[in-house]
Length: 319
Image (cartoon, rainbow, N blue to C red; front, side, top):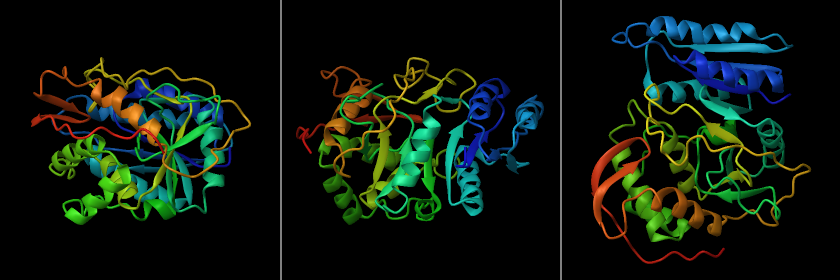
């Protein structure tokens, strides 16, 4: 495989070994490994980090292995951020995985094809591997365009990453929020994002990096390619996980499915609003308390906070 593959790792040799096996099957010519350092207050973590890094000594195919290992703990925000800065300083484009996100074999050729097709289309910001609906109209076309970005398995280009802003500068600007609201075209979807982003500002220094990438996509009215079937399964939930401790999360352990080749391309490079409406209904509406309870504890991706459920006008489900 010609496209470079990058992976972020930490202290989970068991999950990392499984993802490494998928990478080994793809046989990339270049592999870039990003590792965070152990936390000094966690007994045994130094050894677990070392065991995880040692997995990449198992590369037994013709492959250039580049490593970017931190000896201090930077956290789930700064370590991916600094690591991806390094990745895109080394290569023009890359396929990127997390250590607990298992790709279907078709994930790699799909990403490689999308990177080639949309390399010159600056509005397309990334390629996702996750389709949390399991599938969406696979008989009509092989992928769709979303505004939602997932960092569990993705691909992008240096030219897009260069526009990434770790601090989400500009989010609090009312004009920028208005532009994002108009682009999304749905008050309920925008209000969910606004709740997430308002709360996320307190976590940016350590805990998150992917909200900022989605913010860049939204600010520029960008598009994210989503496969018509799910190609990434996050199997790392439980007590050892950082963000996905809830094993009942309906985005965890979604089975993967094969993608039919040759790919059938959409007729137009436009946001699929029907897909986004269904994704919102399935993932976020479905996970909230009953509609009768308008005050609740909202479980948002990476944290919990009390909020008032904002309900606004219904969303149009047409393009």
